[in-house]
Amino acid sequence: MRNNGREKVIKIFKARNNNQKNNLSAGSGFTLIEVIVVVAIIGIIGVSLIPGILSSLETRDLENSARDILSTIQNAKFQAVKTKLNHRVRFSNDLGYWEIIMEREDSPSTWNIVPGYIPKSIPSNFNTIINLPADTYSVEISPLGLVTNFSSTSNTIEIQSDKLKAAGVEDQRILRIMGGGSIKYYKASSTG
Image 1 (cartoon, rainbow, N blue to C red):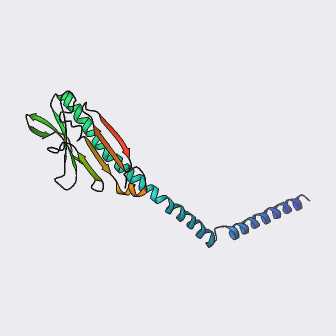
Image 2: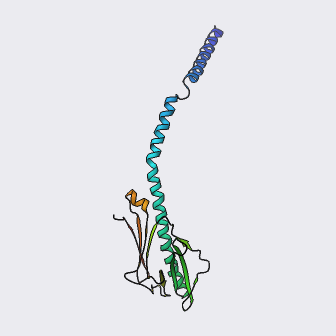
Image 3: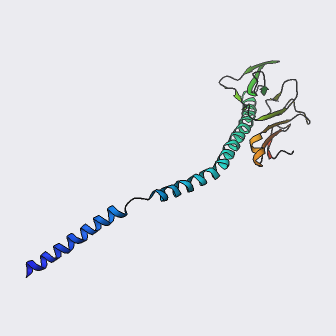
């Protein structure tokens, strides 16, 4: 009798095992319609997110360009005070795009690029308005950290993105240089 009971248990176990295998093979995987629906949903979500991602990238590039200018002017101020020599940040459009160059005055009216400084540039896809004294397009800083060529009417640098303007978000970064050597940084939206 014991063997009979044991054989019954073994038969029941084998039967369950076979049913599980059959159920797995018959019900495993996805139908073609399920796959198409999932791919369509992922596609719709992806298409809806692309404009936001592109806008974020453009905003980041605009911010980085403005911060490059800001940090270069702050670094020139630091170097002027440290070395007790006049320094300036000059903006040049000689190559067809705006270049940011940090120079020091080694002797009266003789300006040379600061050793070790690598000129930076403002990407040409941005509209750039340099409203600084027209004779040099520069911000000159004394060893006291003051802006020596300060003008209350010519003291801004504006960078604007047409892509951000089209998206309806803040598309301008404005740097206003103050006579005391400080810089005010603004975000704004274009009009028109």
